[in-house]
Length: 197
Image (cartoon, rainbow, N blue to C red; front, side, top):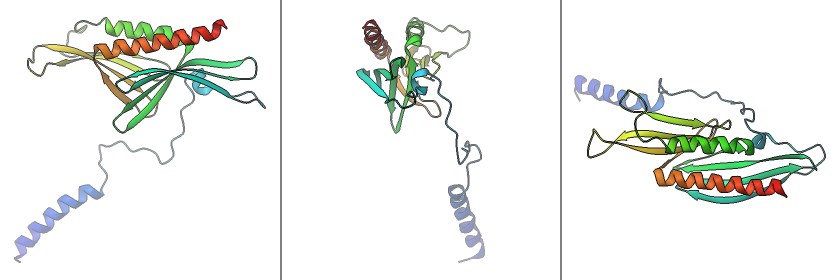
């Protein structure tokens, strides 16, 4: 083998192997030990009273396209209680959840209504996103994208994302977002029935 062929082969081998063994300089580097985030909601941060058992009750309301909604109640002792919903998103290999306290559900429903009410681009730029985020990092988004067949025509679709450190995101069309809103409303009604008892 000639020296120039050997040098060319070595350069090719180095260019293939080095990126596989080195770090990607643009990729974020996670610390070896990541501290958990403090609880963002009462439901997530609920702790039983000293010496008392924790009681968890939940009802799975339903799901739509990888997004499920549970009504939840946790209590300990007579007066220590938290209620709300758990939104679970499963998307590909990601599986995350977010909590919404009972007193934040009405605001979430208004946020979903605002997204469903978007019928055109509310900005002066070509593309847009409209987002609503809860305290527990549940994020619902309406966004525009160009039609596959006509670049001048835009359609509006939706996503639901759950998770605090990492997020899982499910894509929904308008019917899926309407169904998600209905699941949240059913969970709200279930929790209201609990407080009426």
